[in-house]
Length: 526
Length: 99
Image 1 (spheres, rainbow over the protein chains, first blue to last red):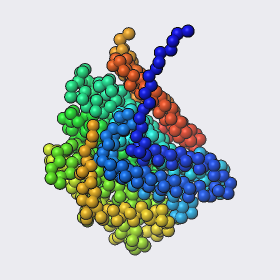
Image 2 (image 1 turned 135 degrees about the vertical axis):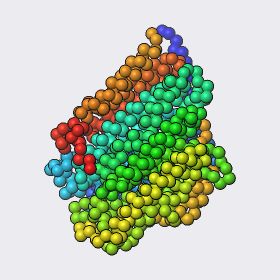
Image 3 (image 1 turned 90 degrees about the vertical axis):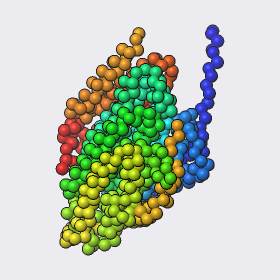
Image 4 (image 1 turned 180 degrees about the vertical axis):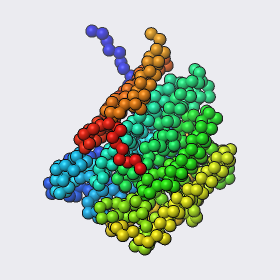
């Protein structure tokens, strides 16, 4: 018998306190999975309440831990170097948790239609006897809440990942639940399932590119660690061919998730087909997570190579802004209009990504802090706007046709007024947060030396303002549409609307409330 | 054996996969092509791990396998659901969302 060599296995160190937000969300999601399995019989009708309780409790606990850890200061790399806890991570975690909570609250709305927005049993065939039975006996499954929490967990990992492998795992953990949730609408299931199929196939395709790009970067540097890759970029051991291939392929995967134009074909169809509360969740949380990860990968790992990617990003930003705006001009469907507008917003954000201004002047936001502020401003307006879209109804279901929105102000002035506030914030008109966000990203791009990009962006945003003003005019100036009414919603819809409206106004009047902390915390550690 | 050959094979497999996704009509086949892309990345990971003499790439291949399995679970659920509803998995027939 041969002697076994003593195998040295060093136990990994996990900083549980610093990683508590991720772990709490994951735990709450796992508990949510058990709810459907364990709450049978008479307790079945309380499933929804337990689920939303888990979501609210889990997210608030994660938020409390994030803020409490923030007071200890940035800690650097944790979990054996795979998660980076720095300023941008902290700000993005707080924003993701806040927007995630507000968006998931709308999932719980049952009063509008008398039934939940999501299908009773997503596994039944639309129009089948099983589906009718599930609806009649209220055999409702509530897996959408844990799925949303899993997705949110993945987003937290994605924005804080310090190595490419963790980044890939985070990407899949947040994407896979989204694919499923897309296909779970109660009404218009065929459209919903089609959206899920498209989103899934294209998303899996893009993650294939992303993964091959990671392999190329690993081949180039011999490591997945972003800091090691950055060191290899400045002193390459091999030629740069692998670097450029990896850079391009990784960019494809990330830009797909943000919705930058050559890779944004999925956005209108998926936003339109997915259940509206989920569209709100995707519109802000997915975008924020993808932008955050893009910033980290391109600033930390590939920052030394920025002369290569900046011109490409500038061109993509221009195409994205213009294509999103022009396409939005002709839309007749509110969700599709907001989808194209989100593409245009991705273009505006990308001007600051391209600028990559990192020098902190006196009170001048860096690219990172400007983008964080823009995402916050866009997020509050998005959460509110999509919640209002769920309110406007016709006898059959939601009224998404703009003609149906005619004269909404005559029926419910407050709803039309709040929607106008969010649209003004999208357009960047004072006194809303959208204006300060646009100013911040354009200033960052300008100081990065991309003044011509800023000129194009300002001109585009003037055209884009017309899109939103058109909707406002339809709501206020047209005679009321006969079949449309504003549904009576519960607090689950009204809380996000009111929070979104208040935050949009407050950040518009006092942007330093967020821009200040974001500037302090706007530096990536490596 | 020269690890470069494995990289060339990985690149060929990746190209076959990506062309397959773009050209095949059947959602299942398109999805299989995506899996081929992921596996070509695995091959590249293993080859690079050999070249660099560290284990990171081999560990990555395991992570990718787990993720790919999870993706199969979600993807097949969606494709089967669409098939049960429409009796077809052709991606050309999924065109209700065009305006």
